Length: 168
Image (tube, rainbow, N blue to C red; front, top):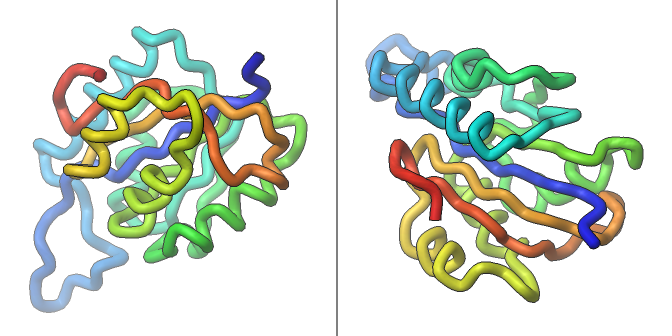
């Protein structure tokens, strides 16, 4: 039986880097806002309930969270910005044990790498093949985990939604 649910979401499409615009301050494009709204709709259609969200402090991840229109306890963290997969897993290990469903909103390449590394026994092979091949912006993966957050090293990848496409 699954004790915990984890969702990993790469932020929606942001404007390109431009002179005078720091990477951390890049906002979403209009298309990116629509992508995030669509992801929020898909999560609500799945009946996903989230207790806690750990979101990068970057403008584009904050805007992605807002456009999802979901209700959850939100924590913004500089530690998620540009974090590698190992650092992200360490942050997951710090989740409160009372949290049953959590989401991380972050960036590539760390978040996509973590998504592939976390997929353990019983994972949906098609979903795993998809994320190992391509993890564009506005992609979300859902995992079911039995281990406590502090001990999490793998989980069952049960669903993925690539960009603005339907779930796999």
